[in-house]
Image (tube, rainbow, N blue to C red; front, side, top):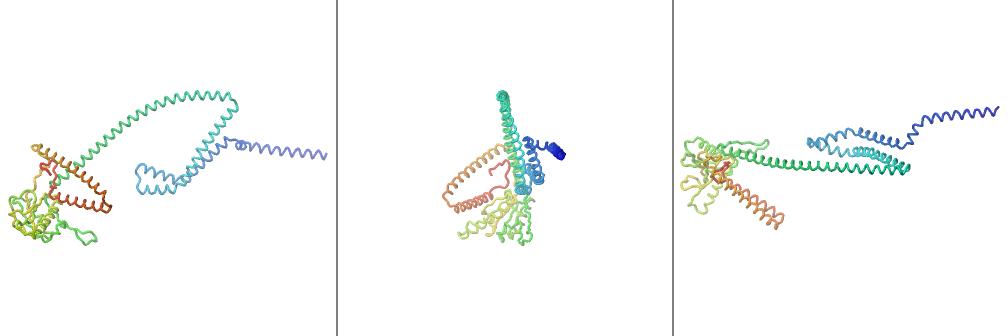
Length: 430
């Protein structure tokens, strides 16, 4: 009996343990199947990597969003210099997070693709092991399908080529239209600049002969600037002024010149009305034909004073020319000049119909003269380039400085004998 009871207890214990193992196995069986299934593990790995990618994006969401916003403003050309500076610095400090996100995202893509390829290869391996005949039939079907697909692809390629040819033609047409539009815009801009220049010249040709007298000083600077400062180098010089009678505008112009010279410290020796004065303003230098050679400096100094006044009046768009004293100009002091103020110059800004032929000839002469000037300038530049090849860098800089200084002096001298008024259709060579 004792042995029988022991045997019965052993059987009961074994039965209970078997029941517990059976229950545990039934509970864990789904996890075990998942743990031993390659496909499910691959899917789980992809999902895990995707979750990691989303977590990284959420972690660095603020920086990535700010970078995207600044990049969009840059692309749309609405960013400021500060925005671009912030974008560069933020990009520099966000390289790590960006690389992390890109790396994790790449892991999701490539790992998922790897799992797909592995499954495909595994399936192919099972098919090969299963049946060589099925493989051959499948290969045959693939070949036929590939032939069909290649034929379809060839048709599509031809269609794409035709569409590409049409697009290329349209692109060429648009390019030609764009070129024409650009040429039109260039011509329009040239006409606008020419019109602006013409309006400016029209204003200059009708500028009143007045000289506003002003003086000012910058804050914190005791040195004052005045309108008559260019005339002060000849302070103490004398001037004789003549103006045509019975013309209030000429009288006003003479009064403006006398007022400006007086404000600069010049002394008026004589003022009188005089008939026979040409239109515009003429400034004459002292000249004594009986002077001794040692007295010629008087002539040179007087001419410098004339040039000073001519440059000053030109700066106010006055029509003025320079000259020397005639035999009748005996009232000019040795340290003085004479100013003759005539009527306001009559200028035809556009030529009247009766002078169209003359205006056309003058215009052609101007074009020919400008062409010759450009040719001479080009030849001079070539000569200078050859000459500069034999000089040291210091000598080249010195030579260029002297040439530039000579050019400015020459231009200043030419402007003294050139009219400030440039009519649209001149009747006389300029």
